[in-house]
Length: 266
Image (tube, rainbow, N blue to C red; front, side, top):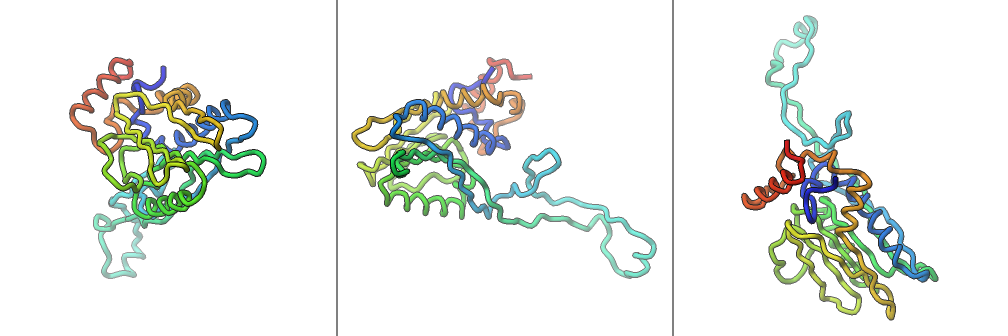
């Protein structure tokens, strides 16, 4: 059946994001590869980002992310233990907290290289939550600045409403999603593609080495291919509000109407 939305599905921004991220990267590579001349090749490249701020640091037996919580635990007690310790906390006052532990978060990007000498021509990045907060944002920005000093084109896809945007001079227009294109010939200027919640995702130009023309990335087609392959509509709970941040009342009403029309409302 596919997604009930004409563009990005906001329900993907929750616990399914990491799985969707890798699936989308594979679909983008397949689409780009089908257009490349024998001069080029496209690789999937895995990066590891150190996340020091994420609260999603433990998993239960269903391999789902859990947020640390404060809860009461009842500790087993024996008469011997009570006799040994004259003063001890009652079970109702014993707390169990989670220690934040930095973890490495994997993320795939797409690298287009020329076959002759493996020169890096274009990088396509799909931003993840770790790239959009605190230390992870700083690390990603450092990598981005370093890449800007090379002769490599950069395409950045930001399909997450939460978190910080990439660092640019000037104010971005209000939009939930963005794509960015930095061509070598146009630096330091970056082309900005704002994307509304209610509109299809754009077709992006993917630059190559001159004088070769751009290939194209039909981002909405890639999203549809992900749904066809995995059938995310079976896994997303459309009976609940989308993941944070909270939508405006008008957008929330529109989201519910799309879900109802698609037949996913219960």
